[in-house]
Image (cartoon, rainbow over all chains, first blue to last red; front, top):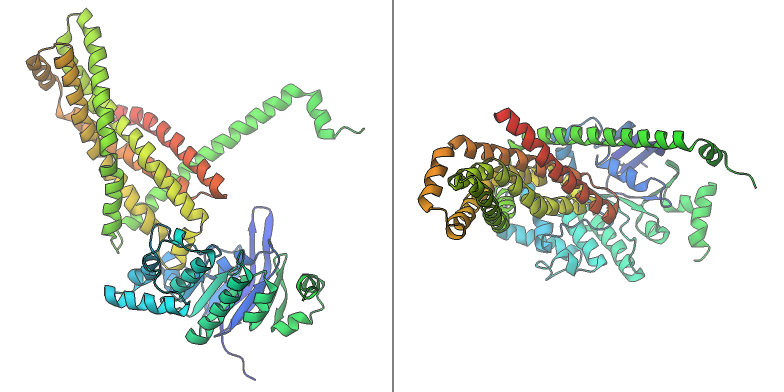
Length: 250
Length: 274
């Protein structure tokens, strides 16, 4: 079986904040069109790793390759070109609270495409339909529920048809029904748009539902990675302990 | 019971410990100040570099002009009017002792145009606009809205800071003119209408003593103060961390630093211009 090319490749990534060594030699490959879930407990360095993938943080050493291009040494202008390949859904959605839903979702279009207002409105409607939202274009983020904000965040993330979508804890703080809905939303984005996804989570149920591959991060190191089944059968003590909390109950 | 070694040592030499802690505190404060000055200067140069690059966000720029300038006009005019009134009242009382009421007009005019106008206008902008800017940027930082801009390949300095700093640089001198006008009107009303100084004397003496460089000095100071206070507010807000408490601390620090900068720069710019 031939494997697909790696869209994202992380090589020996180290990062510390002061005396706190957060990442200790991360190695990770994400294949084109797949969904990789980075699983781990709070404080294990998941979000720090995710921020390196889109160069929001610079590592102390190591490389992050996007489509084979090392983004670590890039300056602001070259980074901007690479970032147009990405969409990112933030934990708290990170919608601009001074803008309406329509203005939020159309923001990347306004910045990077020269489109007429009617064309933009059509694209925004289509993207909101993908996340099953309609008729909320004139609402402000403060008027929406947590789940709706996350969905608007995804609509904004996919509005430029990116190749890669990053999700930072997409189900944290959501009720089980909305969590299931957000999981479906991630699967739909993959099915309908064919995007490569990286999902940061500590939600085991969601991770096993959406992942093609799971990487388990513990204390700044990926101690196990592979398909969900491999993680289930892992003999790594940290992985076993983490999974017991869920499989023990289910 | 065993007393911890550190506490025992402190108890033995309280004077020395107090001195050490005092020196450490001063050292930390100086380092923090130097770090902030370096950071603000670097941010200033970065903003200049981005200000000349397209795309030019005209709508954002005008929104900030409106927020900093138009939005502050009323309070600046009000502050100017009452400053002029009280200054005219006090000087006419004092000058009457020496039979020199004719000097009330020029004294008030020179003081307002050179000093009161740029200082008070900048303080008003600091309290009204810079505090709001700092809080808004800080909130955007801690809620990851600034990170979101970066992930959308939009430079946050270009998008958020350039229009704000440009607005501060342009609009504070405009507000200085508003303050000058309101201040002199208030002074005229009190000096002529209340204190009974002749209108001709007030106007003629003012024209005789007030020169264009007094007015220019106020405008230059306004531009320098406007640039500085907005830069400080943007720097503190942009680098805020630690949730709501962090945003609050950033705003407090920005207010204190801005107000102090105005008075320190007032002296420095005044000396340079003379």
